[in-house]
Amino acid sequence: MNRTADTVAATQERSGGCLCGRIRFTVKGKAAYPHTCSCPHCQKLGGGPMMWWAGFAPKDVTWTGESEPTWFETFEGEAKRGFCPHCGSRLAAIDSDVPDLGIVVTALDDTSGPDLVPVNQSFRDNAVHWLPQVPDTQNSPVG
Image (tube, rainbow, N blue to C red; front, side):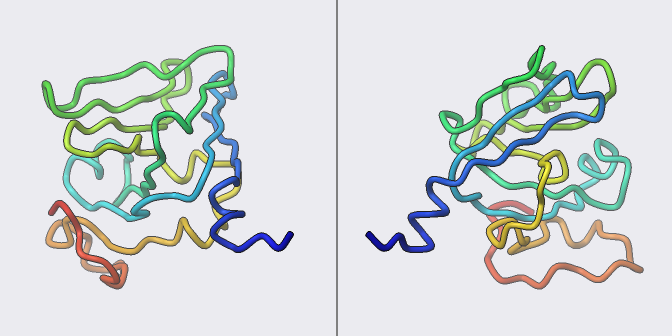
């Protein structure tokens, strides 16, 4: 049986985790809407000019380490961000208007998948002027 690239992507499993290794996770399937975000919130949260996100169905994310993320409610009733309480690594996001669980791509052990290449940069107006912007290959649902 010949497996197509889409079939392989749908069954793909990746692993990731925090800096100290206490929180580990696996994600299955193809990433949804990989993008960078330059909003002031992501800049402060990530400690840099942008964060790199990709979505995965919540049922396809499994926390496998000795603990799970601590969730900080960033916008009451709208958004939560998951991080390791031991090392501070940012790992995930839950947004009330997005069905997928956002995973911080840099928390993955391997970030080379073609489905992780950003298709957009949200909040371009907040981006630092010296860093080239991600080409807009897909309209952003936010920003």
